[in-house]
Image 1 (cartoon, rainbow, N blue to C red):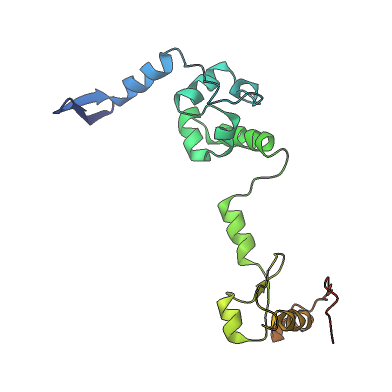
Image 2 (image 1 turned 135 degrees about the vertical axis):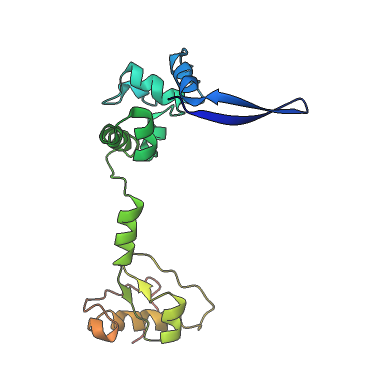
Length: 191
């Protein structure tokens, strides 16, 4: 049974409602000659959809009709979004992964869920000052760059010394039971 939808159309200060057959409209769109993507949509040197593994001429037409003009569009699409167009979630996932490999030149894309799990397990070095740790949302994040900026004598070096000590403490005391390497690039280190 065709799905009917009401569409509100505004035309030159006239408003009227028209009932359309959504399935028929979708078929008509797919039967139309696909528009060739403009140079703006597929930049020179970018891989065409048809050149992607798992995408033939018909599939490329369906993808373009749905608004996917480049491999980059596919790389950033959701599996559900593509499955609606392709009719298969497995095929959508395979095409997305192939596109991601090409767009990212071999570096792996990471899902929001995987990133969340990774961020959830981050470790922090306590500064030894509870209020400062609270401001830093747990301390200084491991594996990142933290920049200290301030006037001469503001305590930047003191915080760095404190962190070098704290990282060596056991985890139950706010450290990471690890080692520290302190590099003084200005020659101002004084024990």
